[in-house]
Image 1 (cartoon, rainbow, N blue to C red):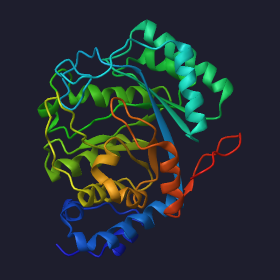
Image 2 (image 1 turned 90 degrees about the horizontal axis):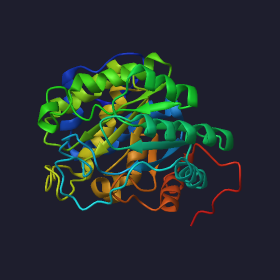
Image 3 (image 1 turned 120 degrees about the vertical axis):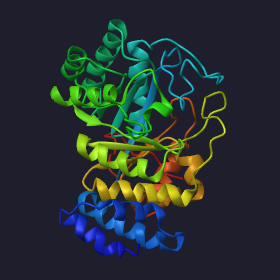
Length: 334
């Protein structure tokens, strides 16, 4: 299928949705069309976000000990990966992580914990930390604690949590190939629960888990239907000891096409290049900023990220600007 990417971008900005054929054409496009495709995705991105790049930082407040059987995760009960394991951090340690996020110019601090869902004690540690962070720093707080009930969601809202992350991870059709310890509907239900209490929904995917291109299109459409405000796009970093160990399906150019697809289908939403960025995009990382307007800085849950100042330099070298600057002196770049 021959597509004029610039015209397609204009149609999206006029409010038209991609057909399935057009969506698949993005993923199937030839590499020699990539610069044109990226420029067209950037046209949409610039319309909504200009040249600004939002920064996010994760703190892994509880590592391992998860009873779920997600095939991609080193913290899962089915994983033999040699990761550091620890119980829920205390409030003061979570607050210290916010200090680091502040130094790295992160506009959003992401409090993440392994497990099916938070216990009462874990929830109390998080809510106490959030209240203190909100008193000291001008940053958004995103929590990612697993499945939630309405009462837990309300507690997080009252504490000051701005956003809640619960990824759909893959398509509904592919879900049981990745995990069977919870359903796709469980994940969607938690996203709806946080929306109901007034927390901004964040939900994304992991690409490269042996799904089809049709699955990738369906992921993007499902997140549009969920009306997720922020969409983290992860690229599988297969960890030894997990069921997906050795999976290596992605190329840098395909990853960029995936990001373009998510921008075309979710034009006004925050698209965040997330886990696996460094190992899958490699030297093409700066090009991800043309369709995406947000990245993580620092480390991920069980894998290392690119050093923070290198991310800052990458953003500036590519002609973009950091969306959030701390109230203190800027960190010198270089």
